[in-house]
Image (cartoon, rainbow, N blue to C red; front, side):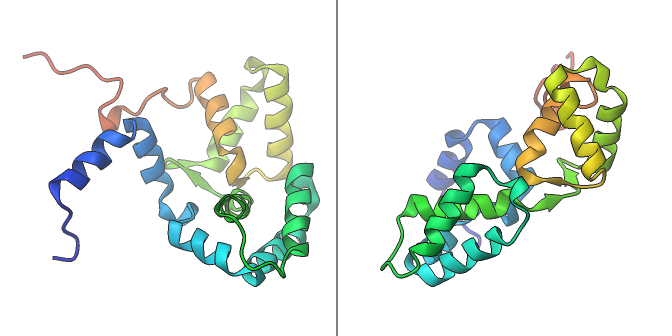
Length: 177
């Protein structure tokens, strides 16, 4: 029984996370989240961390904040340390994951969401309107993972996406008996 979990572990998993967080994590899948094992491997292998930082620094710097650029440069310079802290490895992998481009979010096409947000952009705040126009002009078919939250917030504000997830039982009424 390789997939067997004792009842107490299942109970902790069900009660430890709010349902929306579990739904969000499940929808993104583990492919976008660094596992503890991966974080630990990068933490203990400074050369691997330096290689990841080097690859991220080779990307256009317009997608990275000043703090992220400084962090990546410091990781690259510190390639000769014995090991990094868990937080350093976690942040490095988060930057790596956030820079990935996605074409689908929670079963919604990014292209369709961006197009609809662009068409209804005048109903958004000025800052969100500028952001949607910039994203739509840059790449109307895909978006960086770090921008997914803002796109979904804009889509919800425009009523393109429901606030909750009724297919998972949230926000829906119980049927009358």
